[in-house]
Amino acid sequence: MSKTRREFTPEFKREAVELLRSSGRPLTRVAAELGIQPSMPRNWRAMQNGEALRSRAAAPVAGSAPTVTAPAMALPADQAAEVARLRRELDRARMERDILKKVSRISRTAIAASGGMENAGAEEFEACLAIHGALDHLDAV
Image (cartoon, rainbow, N blue to C red; front, top):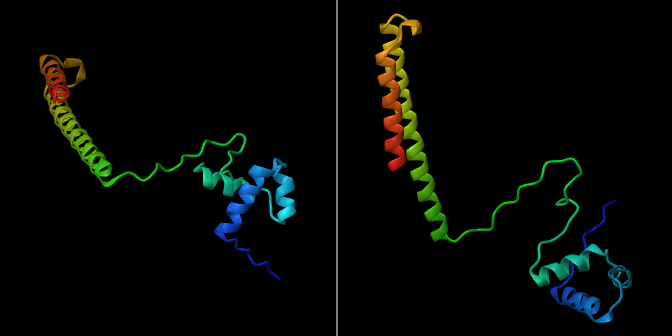
């Protein structure tokens, strides 16, 4: 046999919170008088005050990693600006990746052509300079 969940009207919730405020009695006593759990008027009061709800599900467990909450919904203009920023960041990362791939390919080709790492010399030095020049160019952008 399952219990049915009780529904409370917004008026009842407001009156319960007002009773809690005006009576000066402890929350547990007011809840017992109303026949409800103490967490209910606590949550209703938090909702009326615009506070975050407290629940056991949201409470951190000792030794566990902190939970990450989702950010509040941003305005469409804020979202568009964030999307534009992330696209620029992605384009820059792709450009850096492509440059490093090319330089790596050039460097490997130069090392192979010179007969191995022990014979590496001016070509590898030039490849390193190309890497630094390309990265300096990206930093300027």
